[in-house]
Image (cartoon, rainbow, N blue to C red; front, side, top):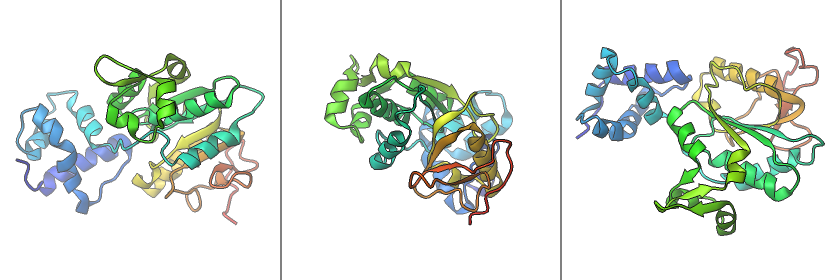
Length: 276
């Protein structure tokens, strides 16, 4: 059985998570370590999280840190999450004369970029180039495979889209069509330390990540996202996130409600937005 985690072990896991991803867990939420690490303890035949912390400190298992990070990351996602928002974001950039470039940052197991690909395909025209990234190697591997359980496939995906864009597999899962998967490039990427994917994007989706970061890191990440946008590109954040008071390189878009864009004159990285 997993008991109450001691403060020393909690600090070990919190420090690892912050060092690798920039995400912070408050001291009062140490229960999250127990809940998240339970399956990993079972896989390693350990009884308590303190044993896992000791093994991490020992440093003999070189893959252990990655496995702990994968367990601790919040990979909550679903198809067409906040459907109206994602549909509006894709509609706002559709119809450009050149093929769209879209970046789904912190894509978890891939439901978001697949949702975007479906919307673009159904709108007609050329399929966009979609770059989908996540800090978790396990999540990006699953996303690249494009296979989902019956439970996952039913979360947010209407039956008509399931039948059109997915095929049943022999293990009772559902796999995304080759057309969708060809449109998406999955890469492992850390928003806090890695440079953005090469090139500029018409639309960047980075939802429900920033509120886990310290203010300084949040500003740094937003600066990177601003630099990756085309001059008329748009940024979609999570419902509880904003650039106001967080970045001087981005502003609420006057063209599309709920989205953000680079401020005028930001091509050289000048900080000109004051929020007024």
